[in-house]
Image (spheres, rainbow, N blue to C red):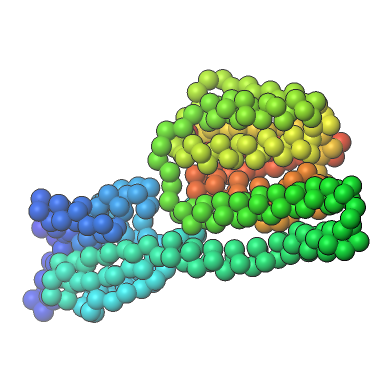
Length: 357
């Protein structure tokens, strides 16, 4: 009973209709659909959501208002329109965190005028857009970065065919230079393809169990020969297993790129340290060198494609300018972050932080 008396002329107050409880068959149908599906009650509460929704948003939205899961005004306005009696229609929206993603939402009423609620079906457009972007970026980057080694190769070939035509010693020298330029182009193409593949799947979080400490020890074994040739000690310390959700091959690539950089540019310090530990509830892997360090103005741009502190030194050491860009995008996919600190004359620290499994 309400705590006040209504006059005869006032309409009877009716509380909002409660969201219906899902029945077994409807729940089975929703769970069987391949796309993320949410069933919304007339009060905007999510009454059903399939496993694909949980995967996309990393949480279970059932029992919560739609706005707690999807904060895009376009989708919330569409839901309000449909619940208010409008016909079904499509809207597109973007998510910026934790990684950029694009969706198309189909919002349709349930019952006459949305009286029983609404259904929202999401279609992930991210992969399609990434493929288009990948094609454009690959052509632009490849045409720009391959121009220099191709010009060098053309010059060497002309020299061998001309002035050095009968000079075996000069031919051997130029053939060696041609080989190094060809190797550089191969590394560049491999890194561009690797970066493109990672970006194409950046929105899909890996789900395998990976021991980050074991990955670090594996990289130490792989790069031990390189460290020895450079006269540098490569040391790995860990407190024990450090399990994260991830793709092992990609995490090996992250650690290997960071350690290779430390050896290439910081081996003058004679020691590269890799530490694996838990810190502030996260898995943390630090790669530290004791080399010349990096000037502060360069640090914010180190993960940009083709950015190099010293172009000639990078190329002479076989760098493509893509290693840290690859690291950044792999960590984005793993919901991780890369932090960089450095002091001139004292070395650099590259810190990877990821959620613990």
